[in-house]
Image 1 (cartoon, rainbow, N blue to C red):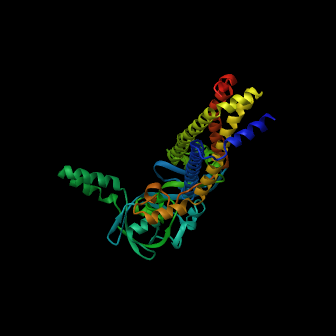
Image 2 (cartoon, rainbow, N blue to C red; image 1 turned 90 degrees about the vertical axis):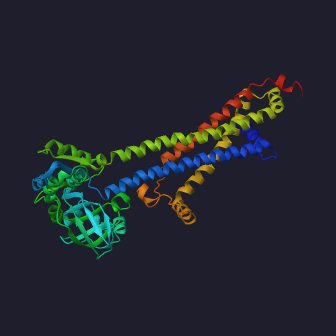
Amino acid sequence: MTSRFSLFLALRYLKPKRSFVSVITVISILGVTLGIAVMIIVISVMHGFDEELRHTVLGFEPEVTIQGDGALDDWRQIIASLSNVPGVVAAAPQVSGPVIAQHDNMVNTPVMEGIDPQAELKVVDIKNLIIEGSYKLDDESVILGVALANSLNAHVGDKITITGGNLKPILDAIRQEENDPDSKKRLSDLKNEVSMPEDLTVTGIFESGRYEYDANVLFVSLSLGQEIYHLEDSVHSIAVKTTNPEIAATEVRDRLNQTLKNGANASTWMDNNEDRFDAIRIERTVMFFILLFIVIVAAFGIMTTLITVTVQKTREIGVMKALGATTAQITWVFMMQGMVVGFFGNLTGFLLGITAVQYRNQFLGWLRTISTMKIFPASVYDFSAIPAQIVPHDIAIICVSGFIVCSFAAFFPAWFAARLDPVEALRYE
């Protein structure tokens, strides 16, 4: 009976009227709507970044990588021993390092990945990433990332020149020569560190979905990579695929680190990208609390509205108390008024937020067409589109938190209204 009476009066007080209080009520609802919508959009986008990063990393990087202090001379024996390690599905040798790529008077310094084409497919499905040409690698061919190909103005069938080797001591010697002319002899002694330029035919162009990979990686055959880096039969690392990238990868890493010798060690894809994932998780948590203040500000609007209403309804409150209305009934009248505002603010904010997340990239495309600025450039954010993932658990936390904040804001005006003395309220009536 109490709840029906309180709800009836609360809804009656919320009926639109031509008064300033009605305007404040509408503004309060819009404030809650905006706060909830922005929280849903931001948290969903942050989740999308995390999930898309995991997807692109796992689609391009091995789940476990074995490396040594230098080149791995016994890589064949290590791969053979991996068949006895529980959780290991496949393994492939790799050679990697910076090279100089030239084509059409364009120069770039990408990272070369020397791979065994057949063995690599069992670890990372690069073939599925090819968007032009084919997955064909021999000692005279190369596969480029799409952004790297664009920067070199290279297409399938073109020839590009690759120069590699241990470039770091060469660059250090060049810098030293600028200050010390007597260092020319040291520079000439290092000429064997650089391989002869190789003219390679572009047989394929891949797109991973992540700008960092697409702009900075090219693939060559394992034997060519070994030749460029003067490794003979050695490799730089071994890529390992496991039965489960989340759980088995960690278990395989731990098992390998107990058995590997000669300075070799294993690391997972999570270890190699730990900083990025930690940054996203921290940013998501911080953004939640920062954006919650938007809802808190809107809650102050609700509190202001109810304070104004209680002042205007002083006579009615006095009459109700004189007729026997209890303190709880009066409290719930104004509590429910604030809760109704919070409920509709949450509902409209939820609908607006979900809609904005669904059409985020269409809106981004429209902004790009009307603006001369580069909005959400892939070179900065690593993704060509805005990723997003709606997590029901997080949406529930956002909406419940917003409703609790609004209800808490409504409590204080309701409590003070319920404590009004009917004699004082009706003294001058």
